[in-house]
View 1 (cartoon, one colour):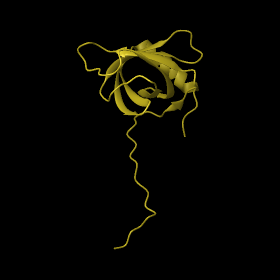
View 2: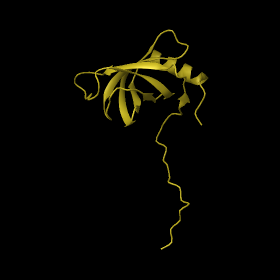
View 3: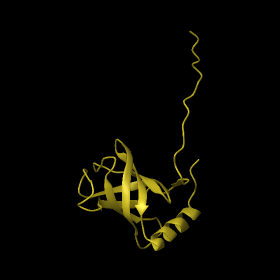
View 4: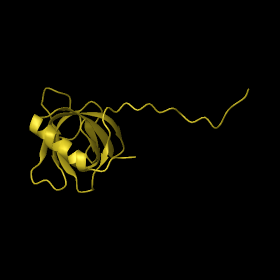
Length: 125
């Protein structure tokens, strides 16, 4: 049987938005979205955002969350004086102390603020 060891695995990109790098000062806090929705992790938590897009972000945090948890986020973007609120975000993946969330619901003014911030941020390679 002939084996080809030089075959690299195919990676399918499912993201709908390009990600941007953010500085280590991009803080956020989160809390359960509503008592009627599933949230099996810590009641509240804080973390750092490592990359950000209009549709979600990667968070580093000591708080325990699980895939499927629903949460509300308060994000303090670098250079901004007031926080940006995400009304509903869902945890889509998690490994160790990092997890990714999808922004499901946020106000129009908040979306506009996030898009302006991202337009000036460096894109990830």
